[in-house]
Amino acid sequence: MLDKYLDEVKDFLKSQRKEAEVIVMPDFFIDRFVNINASLNHFFKMVMDIVERKGGSIDGISQKEFRGGNAINTAVALASLGVNVTPIVCTDKLGLRLIKFYVKSSRVNLTHIKVVEKPSITTALEFKTDYGRANVMLRDVGSLADFGPQNLDVRDFEVIERADCTCVFNWAGTRKYGTELAETVFRHVKTRGKGKTYFDTADPTPNRGEAKKLLERVLQSDLVDVLSLNENEAAFFASLLRGKPEKPEKTMSFKELAKESAKFLASHFKARIDLHTTEYSATFSGKCETVVPSFRVHVLRATGAGDAWNAGNIIGTICRLPDAVRLTLANAVAAYYISNPEAKHPTLKELFKFCDKLRGRWKTKTDKN
Image (cartoon, rainbow, N blue to C red):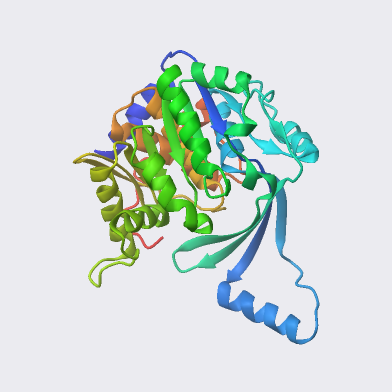
């Protein structure tokens, strides 16, 4: 039954359809990936040994610099899949050069990038755990903290009006004006545009103090068509809405809490709630619920999986795919990315072939990873 969804995804990938236009904003990060090929406890011991002897080095730590930021990463994934994308992101002069170096696709319009004083930089530490890989993001958001509606001009609003989907990511990074940015952009889409609005806040806890304002002015409004969340984000916003801590009941696992939280949000928000986890993805809209397992692949990285998943989900949303097919498409795009040795996003042809490799590789309740 589940493999039938892959067949429908393949039918979609080889079908003829009009070109889509997507807006993504507002972040570009200069990322450094640090692959800690050890558990947190073992790494902590190594660090403590060095600190106690007043300093030193740990050799053999694989590291790589790459483009980062939810908006830019999603843009690259979308462009690989044949979508035209306009990033409205902020970075400094060096960051602009790096974007032009990393983003080669002619489908990405780089004429709306905002040059600011301070770049956004992330160091991502990836650890081994009993349940797979986990990443810890050490961030300096730079001028992204001050980015808001005041940074947008007439040209920006014109492309927003023409877009099939306008996506705002990383509310947590836009510390001062993130709520105003989402509210202004999404309201413009609703009053002057034609497309869908897509919101992924990223981890809201660094900006916890502003979360209630976001809840009241954006999430509980009719401005958001799709709210994309992971487990932690779903639990956070459900807790905020309830006025209770996001802790699972004694009889409830964290995975169960995430699903229950997403269902709760769907019953209180007008937006469709899309939940993506390492085990499954799900859609909740009113009382309707669709859950599709993730794929069992050899995971080479954890960072960026959500951006790849969002790209597939955005395409499925624009093209009005059935929920189960849309979720399968998003899961397949993410699976390709996290298992690709070169951290490459798939083209349409590559994803079509990859779908055949995914047959029968659905995660089940008996899987441990």
